[in-house]
Amino acid sequence: MPILALSNISKRFGALTANDDISLALNEGEVLALLGENGAGKSTLMNILFGNYVADAGTVTLFGDPLPPGKPQIALQRGLGMVHQHFTLADNLSVLDNVLLGAERLTALRSARAAALAKLNVLAQQFGLAVSPDALVRTLSVGERQRVEILKTLYRGAKILILDEPTSVLTPLEVTQLFDTLKKLVAQGLSIIFISHKLDEVLAISHRVAVLRGGRLVHVGHTRDATKTSLATLMVGSEVARPIRNPSAQPSLAPRIKLSQICAAGTEEHASRVPLREISLTVSSGEIVAIAGVSGNGQALLADVLFGMVTPSSGTLAVHTQKPIARIHEDRQHVGVVGDLSVWENAVLPSLRASRFTKWGWLKRAAARAHASALVAQFDVRLRSVAQPIRTLSGGNVQKLVLGRALDGAPDVIIAAQPTWGLDVGAVSFVHAQLLSARARGAAVVLISEDLEEVFALADRIAVMVDGRLSAAFPVDQWSMQSIGLAMAGESAAHAA
Image (tube, rainbow, N blue to C red):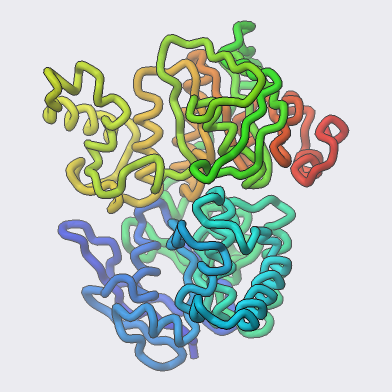
């Protein structure tokens, strides 16, 4: 008998049907992969399971007993743990306090906190999820915050673990270590619902695969019978065409970005606490230079420096463009958009002073809405209305709007940090195509990514960032997965390349 069963689950938000009569089961000691495009209904279904949403119809049975709808605390008590794609952490508390929040009293005796700290350190080591227990969450990068979310759930001893994109910020070695640990836990009876857009990982870790499309369950089958192509086709409903970088394209000799011996210190207001140490980099028109590295090694601070948000303490920075620099921020939910504002308001936020949207200090609402509607159509943002709050969109659709807003006006310089984090295979292909198109028209693109497949697919040159230092940028054909992995682990990048 399944330990978890969702039966005939349906959920509607106004005219939108997010889940349509879905029935799905999970067995003990099983990894069930849940796939689907952004907006296919995966997050809604998992939120119903966890109790954050109440289904319009259907039931959930956990370990043979009905699970009361809308009761997350009961779900937690009965062994259900969930790591959300968008984090639920208290920024003003430490890592340890976030892990203990809701699990134990924050005012526990010193001996109890010492035991909790020891347990947390053991979990962090086992899973390759290194993060300082004393660090305030607001000082952490996106990748480090996701590690805290995973640790928080594991600390509570979940019997069923729902992982939403758990490896999107891990290195290949860390992914391997995580999978080794998950396999050991599964062998001991832990069950996992694994939500990921990385099809290689799905094929490597799961026993069965379930695919949602348009709110309906369109496929459930054994992973051994699946391929990357078949899964991608099931998700999208048609074959997915991957954009291909033209390796013969040569960048202009004219540099758009030039950093020389840049040093800068991180602060609590910025994502990275690792200072930049004598960073030198040149990016010319018509090329994509990728910055690879493990999250938290200074990439976010480098992006802030390039965008003019942080002034270097030494060194020189030159950006040659008459247009605004475009930035795709790694934290789309908290920094890239304002969640409670509408889609159309977010679409024009960076351009509010432009004459096309204001007159005598008054906002031209009709023009702003028309502009947002055009971006929505051009960048395939799927929504009900440009008037709905942007927080109600799926992560992938938020990212496509952020991308469209950034690329509006054909910028000469683009800073793209984790541009496809958490996106489905179709959305990834779309974002990649847009960045390659910008490259083809002569833009200089700095791609900051921890996804090595993405790095190799898009970059003309690759540099590796470790502990605030940046290696020389070598042509992509001088790197391999092994050599770049060694460089990310701290080996000499020149030797690795």
